[in-house]
Image 1 (cartoon, rainbow, N blue to C red):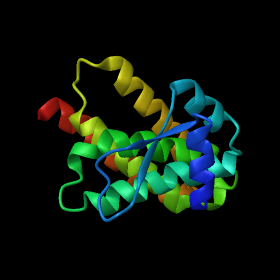
Image 2: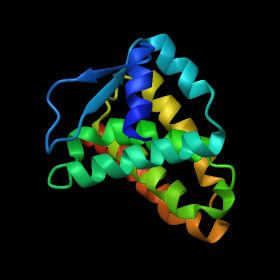
Image 3: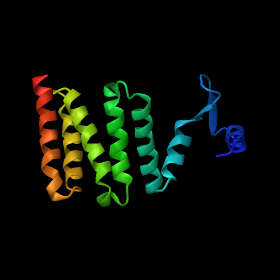
Image 4: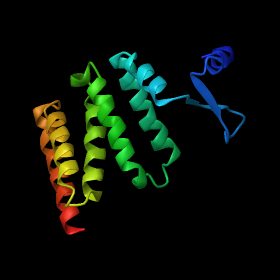
Length: 153
């Protein structure tokens, strides 16, 4: 978007500028949750997939020194990226990233939080089906090890 687009969106009260930007960049946030949700729902699936994938990349680049506190956020966004990817069958790299972050979250999820663990395992089973059969075993073992780590740790 061009600077004048941001000014117009701000004048119409769709977005608001946020203090604390670094490097001369100006940060913006949606003016309300309704504007955010309507804007998001208007995106095409491919745009949603790209948005979630780029969000993952930003977290990976920004927190590369210690990304572990952000595994849940990364899992959330990469799961959405896979769900909205229309050509997901050909994008095994994206599916593997999703499975990796799901495994990291499973390692840290309390064994008592059965609802979250069940939801994550269901997503991982769905994603495993998207991989070629010869690539599934390694991913399945990693997920089982992640589940076991929660019980041991």
